[in-house]
Image (tube, rainbow, N blue to C red):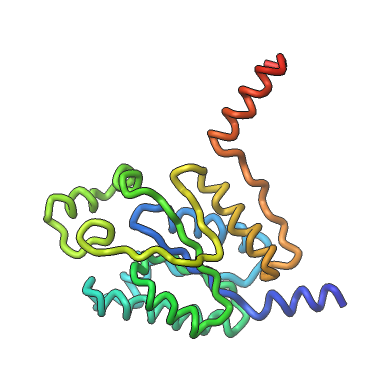
Length: 211
């Protein structure tokens, strides 16, 4: 009976929506979550914002209307997947709160994951030089510089990717999903210590004379 109930809970599906500034870590963390769920044999699909732009929404630009349409299309695919018992992961900037809330309302089983990272850290991580071009005025309508980003007001999960490694962020997402009842029987990865926690532990061990 317990096994049947667990299977039923998984089969109903859920959408994990990763939102945040460019270079905040959405693709990295969602990829780790995807890999772990796949390794457990879960039915899971990942829609990354860059790949979606190349395939599903290639003709759309970066006006507010086009950005919203981009998110609606991703949301529609997630809705179909979730309705059919798949765990759908979407990693897209999705800068506007209203359209994210619209997608939440359509899907129902929706977990919003805010990948929070300071702008200056995102700029440092940008290997493509997009922020540099945007700050120089060479790239228009760039989120976080010349276009706004509206953070979620009540996300189910908030990650601070400037303060913890990607593996720790992914482990926190998986643990939260398990707590919410979406992943019964989950074998969650061990959450590693952050550098700050490791330093604090080392100081304590030194005080106690173990190091």
